[in-house]
Image 1 (tube, rainbow, N blue to C red):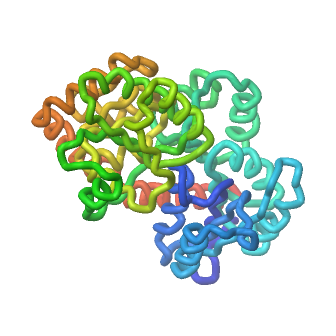
Image 2 (cartoon, rainbow, N blue to C red):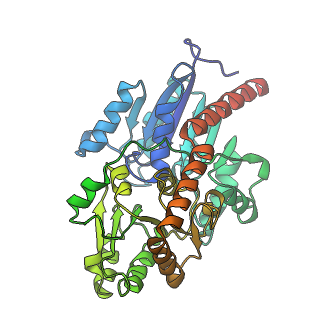
Length: 389
């Protein structure tokens, strides 16, 4: 029977592939670790593809130092490839020696490895947290989700009702094993949009459209670039800023050059001042091909920005079309461009949408509430594991 540690706290280890300094799922995982009640939980954070000894990124090193200052036990495995199976030994050792009660993995790669490691390390409770994918193609992934991860874990966590429905319909995962825990964020701090406009050489009158995203194919930012080309004829002073970086940066910049709109697009790279960036824009956009509960949209909502987003995944769960934002079908360049233009031209409607979005975010998508729900799930599952034994 799993007992609390000598100090009365449950021991929880969070497993991720990458450090949570970028990427929505990774950020949320790290914030959950930080926010777990330290009076009730001993917190461990393992990043399988991070090597502290080789890390030269000051932002990452500061994030890890902060976690340790707050009492979190942090370890990196330095894994470079799937073949490096021996890299998992330190994790198995920690799980056994520290007698960890809960192993909570995030995203597919970590979920697969955790499904294999949890029984070997004799962990009483294993939770696999899926942060959304398309649920299309990739039959091997569907097989592993259904036959390995879902059968090994005590609960499979989904970030939206849309993801839960697709897990059931496409992957045939038993409904009773899935728990929906929507993402949440904290209220944004006061922001200085004027500073960003000055930095970027933008005047207060320039209409600015913005996005926050890792530049991956699933984020669909080609749609935004093509929308720029459709808009600049009528809005010649339009500027578009994207806070983020990733493998799609060069293709997006090449497409902007090909369409003759390179001067209208600024890709800013990873920013540590996202609230300031959001305060500098007039309309926020999300172009994703698939989504769960995107943190970027929650940040747009908290910033009271009018939002144009693709109608995919869990987005309709958090934004009601015409009330909290404007939803457009994925790939609809004309509809996306016209929706942006309408909000730029109707500032009163834009203001109203943004204000309602902020109220909805603060009522339904709060990080503290998300963490409290996770804590309750940990305790219930550990208690159930104890009664089974």
